[in-house]
Image (cartoon, rainbow, N blue to C red; front, side):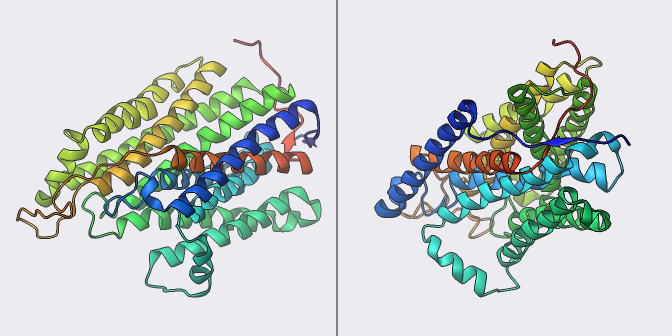
Length: 396
């Protein structure tokens, strides 16, 4: 393999300062939203006693799941020995840690009492999947941090392969743990399924690669560095396969649920008469997040515009998918007494209403901005980006 030269991004240039200032404003607005919700109480949000995980959790889960998938590019190059992907390993590892930091930042600040995080970190209930995820998230930073170190420091090359394999296994376990949070919730008919774990792994592959492609295209354009269209097409076809795998596990999830008689009502709610959730499922998750990207990326001569647009559609469809899983699953009433109708003055037996507020959306966007800030600081402080990635073809 030929020598690869890496360069850091020049900081403190006018363009760099403008970008960082814009991201800092978004982070500051997110902080203001947190203070507003903290002082006023959660009654100023769209969340209720029925829908306790709102829009901030949608952003947080999307970023956490995407973090695992963003590491996929590094794993393909190191674990599976695919040389075209190896120059992108450093960026892949950095972006993975940044996305996880952004997602966890939103998650912690949406707890209502962020100071109680210390309790979760010092008192473990090993029968709880939430406790296991605290270990998995913390370990991800350590494992991927060492993995990135082995790529940055030639003295650590001996540990490169073991670190790569460890990071690959850890990210699969992490995403399995995130999916199992929902799979183990027996009280919610929309969640309780063993398919949730592999579904979340497929989601992570698609979401993470889509975000990686978007950042790679954006950085190559901003820095005027060459980026091989052949490599982009490789990643585009891989993204199409991941989108197809995601749709397959979605079909498996709902097909399995439809086979069980007691799941009929919740499946009818999501697939047919759930209002906004049905629209987001078919229009956002299936069409925009699956069918459209596959149609664009499986073309023989996909252009940069096709790949960029398809990646954006996967991200949009991914947000819709997490929204349907998270909010739609909570909106459907709990089956307190199977086979019987339940009604009360406390919304039992009724579909819960939820509409995200501006404060919730700002908090979620703040997590995305934080992930970008960490990534940009990383590529400015260290030699992360390759100087070039193949010859630049004529622009489409």
